[in-house]
Image (cartoon, rainbow, N blue to C red; front, side, top):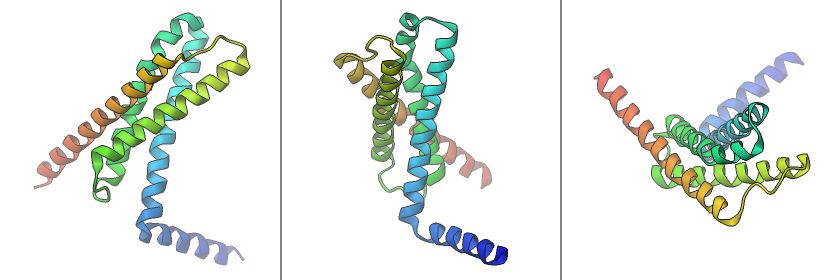
Length: 152
């Protein structure tokens, strides 16, 4: 039974590597999850040290940093598979911003705090997420090109 299970897991792993769309989608989801988790953890850490009034000013920059991590992670994992690198990194940054804002709003609503995002602050956070994800992707492209030149 254990041999069958190990063989099944190995074959499933090979299937996902062969099926590039599923592998690409899982790496895309991993990159977004990485950014969202980082945003939530950094915000909760700052809430232990500072009152909410001060933390609200840091949230767009926390989203920006984690969106850059999302764009960088997306391209490091999928550089050869992505045809439209910049558009996909901008989409990942947008999704990172949307999911982070929604989760933070839900958390702060249930904790009994005030409304976290207004209309303009939400638009600002999404814009910062898109731009910084693109910057993270550009950094990944430059890093991979430099690494490629060093190997020659």
